[in-house]
Length: 246
Image (cartoon, rainbow, N blue to C red):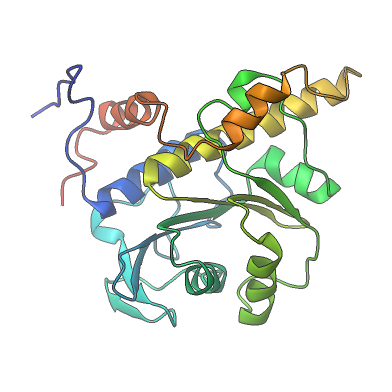
C-alpha cells in the first residue's frame, strides 16, 4: 500500500537497515555516487555495526542486502562481503563510540576541495542550513583506508570533528542519526559546489553570512530541520514503491 504522509507522520516507520538503504539512495542523487566506493555504518551498540555491502552500488542496495559486522570487520550476518574501506569505520567506532552513524564517499565537489587542501566558505544558507557540525581538514593522506594504520591516523586527525574533508581522498560525515548524516552530507556537498562556482566566477573570498548565523548552525546536531530528510525518503519511495519490501 502506498504511504500517505500526514503532518504528524511524514514517513513510514523504518528499521535501521531500511534507513541505511534510504540514506544511500538519497545521497546517490546528491552526488555521492562514486561507483562502488562508499560506506555507511550504523552502530547497534552491542559491538556490531550494520553497513552496506561490497559489490553493490548505493543506488541498487535493498534492505535485504545490508550486512552486520563486528568491530574486526567480520561479517556476522548477511550474504555479502564487507566493503574494502571498512577499516576507516571500524577505527572511528572504536575511538568514538558515541557516533551512531558514519558515512564516507567521494562526491565530486567535496573531493575537489579535499584535493586542494582547503575548507571552502559557506556562502549561503543552503550550504549550512540544518546540518551543523565542525568541518575539519585532514591533510595527512598516508594510504587508502583499507589499511587499519592509515585509517586510525585519519580518525585521530579528525579530533572531535563531525565532518571531514580527507585530502587526496573524499569526505567523512558523522552523526547521531541517519537523518542528521543526510542533512550534513547534503549541506556539505552544496557548500563545496557553490563555493567552487563562486571561486570560478572570481567572486568574493569570504562568506557573506553573519558569524552569528555560522556559529549557530555549527552547533546543530543535524536533527532540527524536520521535513528535509522525510521529503527525500518519500521521493525514493515514490520512485520505487517496492524498495522496502524484503
